[in-house]
Figure 1 (cartoon, rainbow, N blue to C red):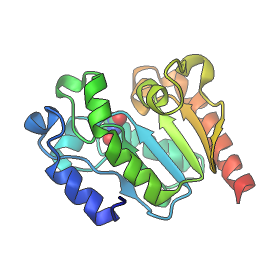
Figure 2 (cartoon, rainbow, N blue to C red; figure 1 turned 60 degrees about the vertical axis):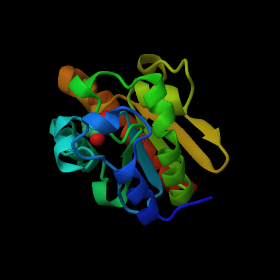
Figure 3 (cartoon, rainbow, N blue to C red; figure 1 turned 180 degrees about the vertical axis):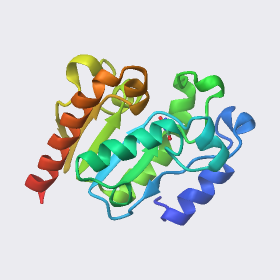
Figure 4 (cartoon, protein in one colour; figure 1 turned 135 degrees about the vertical axis):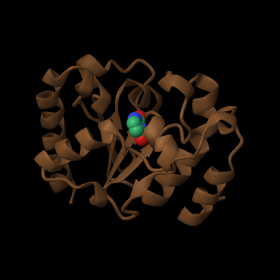
Length: 185
Ligand code: URA
């Protein structure tokens, strides 16, 4: 069974698969180009995303836009989504049951998009998507290959907000992503 983009969005909007559906304000479906080569996967919507129903509209989003622009990338040419579609109260880490309950939506998004490159933003996404023991500090910028997709991870933009010295490292990871995309064309 595979849904269309509209159907996925409708299911996400009506989802009650985990208790976050009772505390969320708005669910946050992925956004961007449905023909994108590059899919960014982060952890979970923050407070502002919960208010607006759109991923990365808060401070992390501003930083992400600046970073992308510095590497010659634009948000509208990518597809950006989260492991969880609902905001965990207090921005706590997603719980295992929440990640599993929400995972089908991400699978449907990925199946429709068929990205050439998946970029996990932060430890939570990298450990769910690439490998359970992924160490973001040591392994960011490394590549794993699955079927027709190259997977990598870098720090989450909120890690740069906490420690601006990480900006350059993340920029280098994104520059490599741009080079990888050119090679895969
Ligand atoms: N942080 C995330 O992980 N995702 C968002 O959409 C916003 C902030």
